[in-house]
Length: 103
Image 1 (cartoon, rainbow, N blue to C red):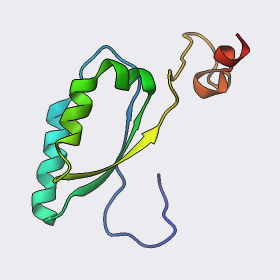
Image 2 (spheres, one colour; image 1 turned 90 degrees about the vertical axis):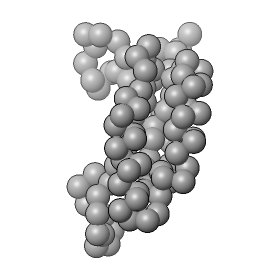
Image 3 (cartoon, rainbow, N blue to C red; image 1 turned 180 degrees about the vertical axis):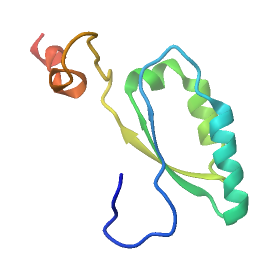
Image 4 (tube, rainbow, N blue to C red; image 1 turned 120 degrees about the vertical axis):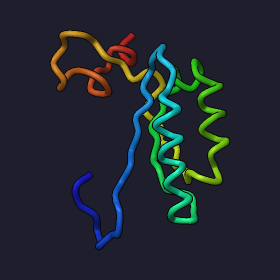
């Protein structure tokens, strides 16, 4: 995001937790949460999650939820599977790929 509708004092933080077998980088979120101490209020963060990520990472999802006093998280829907096909052009990949709907 490079522009807002009005002047802001700060920045935007948007995180994409797409399907992965890797654990989230809790250290990253801990450092963000520490910044809320300076502001004396929870920091707003938008986090995109897919249904597959949520199903495979209940512990990490819970850990992020435990940060509610430090992070004001807006959860965003990133489809269920966030399909990606290696070698397929981007204009026919991710959510521009309708293979799941065609079956």
